[in-house]
Length: 269
Image 1 (cartoon, rainbow, N blue to C red):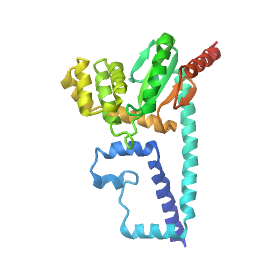
Image 2: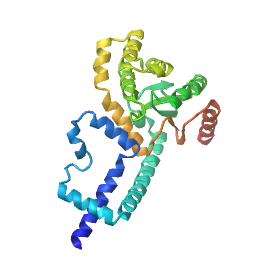
Image 3: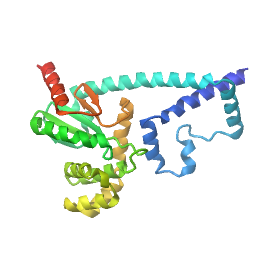
Image 4: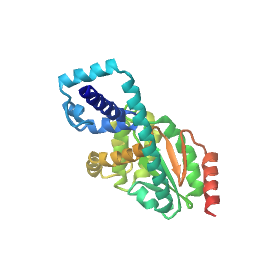
């Protein structure tokens, strides 16, 4: 009986850890696993391979006690939800009191000294992100002295295979001061995303091509950093926006952005 309970506890732990592979966790795992041999994939979460005999015991316990799966997932999801809420609350507070800590070296458009910060989590191959660019440009054209726009990379490669290569290219362009120009070109030609296009845009922007290639090769660290932040905040889709303490996702229009800005300004007065 003690052994059975011990194994049940182990199974619950395995299942709980396995659920990390949901949403953005799986996105980040895909990126990391691309840099490791396939045979190491089973080590990503547990750090060791499960022996065949123990695997049989695991499967038998699950067959006899299917409720373990549901219970373990529910417990994990509730714990994750609380952790994400705590992280999000801390993030929003820091965004208000010390925005530079959140911005880091992410690309910024608009007045660098503006007190209102609009953060965009986006994917260059996401059609909804592309649609959001028109109202965003209109908004920033009107309020660029009051608001600074910050770009965070949130590629979702399982449905957008060109999202990571596009982000790496934009990051490399940013190293030569051309992030936003490259950003605009990617969204304008979203249906043609390819290695040929990334090089062509770099040439059109008169970038140092050799430097562009070198910087592109090491850009994954920046993407992983933004993915980690998104995962901690519980963000699982794009586009996603945070303006000071206000959060909104999906389709956005100029009226929504202006209403949010007005609310923030009223609270500051």
